[in-house]
Length: 261
Image (tube, rainbow, N blue to C red; front, side):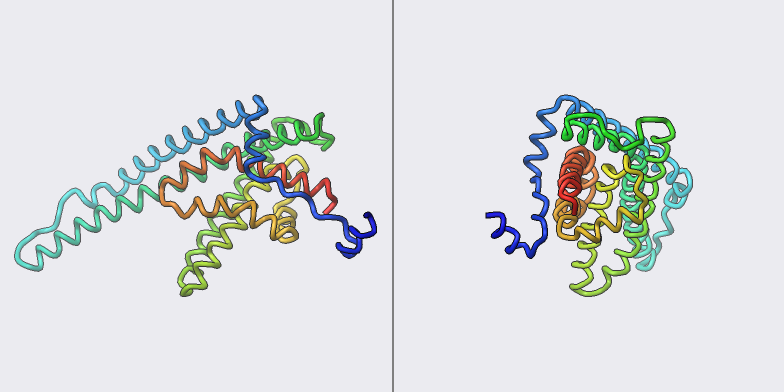
């Protein structure tokens, strides 16, 4: 039997098993420590996002509120069109500014809570390993600061990805597919960041892991990328599902590492 297996894989070891999202959910729910920490992170992320949103909106309104205080004159046909354009511009500006404020607030909350998600990934690995981790990097203030910096790097990379996506999106048909693929890989990178933090991997090494395991990265980032396509609601869903995606990615990352790939 062993000889048959080797011949079918060309002498290579079998691929790491895929841990499905339902199995990851069961792993999370069955461990009160992980579940409690996840709920705390959801509340913290949601609270920071909402507070950041209120502050951002207040700041934008203080800078630009006077732009729409007085409508233009409405004399004649040209004035009528001018007023209608002013109304459309006002509500368009309000919509765009609110959505942008929400996205920036969530991105800020993501960066600030990154040490908490690193802790969740670490706790997941400890339970999975059934013992303490031998990484050489214990929980410390310096370690939390490093995790925060790494989270900010991923957040800034997200801004760059968004700019690139806007440019690529102008390519007819093909552009939309490339944008979705780009967001899929970026989503996978966001969550791979957490289990690799205890190992103090650089951003380059994390990206290299994504490149090496493209198929697994696509499977890890597919659902988060699909959620990002839903306007406004996507941020709420991501805040709720972030802990589950963190556990899911951590378990699959460990499966790859244990398999020596």
